[in-house]
Image (cartoon, rainbow, N blue to C red; front, side, top):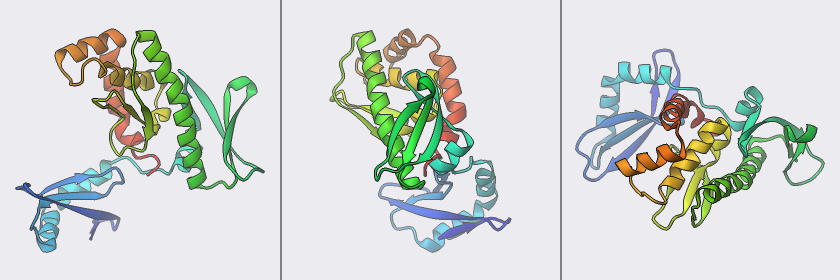
Length: 235
């Protein structure tokens, strides 16, 4: 099923039938698709009618939603990645090797991503590797500085979350942290490290996070401004 705007643009419709859901609800996904969350036995025709009734709202949401970028498109437009508390210029090169790798050039100021073929799949795999290498070091730096110990660390392709911390003290981070400024990247890391002591978002959690990051409120506001856009990169 697709939703076609009055301008002739097409957005796919994803229907999610859930037991226990009582009402029909529409949202816009990270791929700028229409997500219809509906009761389990709702027919496709009823969903289509509901979408048509919400046409004006949907068109407004779709028109204001940030554009979806491939990672190649994004780095062509914004050739920078954050790592180790710094921002590196990024250059993509065709490599003579069969596998992708990265090196630093110009005294460490430029990150060179070397690909066997300049294609999205190779770029995504290499940036994910770079994210794992650098975020492991950054989390280790902050945890040592704060006297904290965590379990495992994974870097993943989360659809909407920047990070999470499990009851087993495992931290998971979104590779898109590389697209944030150094201050915001550190804020996400410190947020998850604070969960090692306080698993919920209680008053004690926010007090602790304020201690880890005195500019926490400012960084949260800045993150809110960029999250919708950056979460659509590499979809």
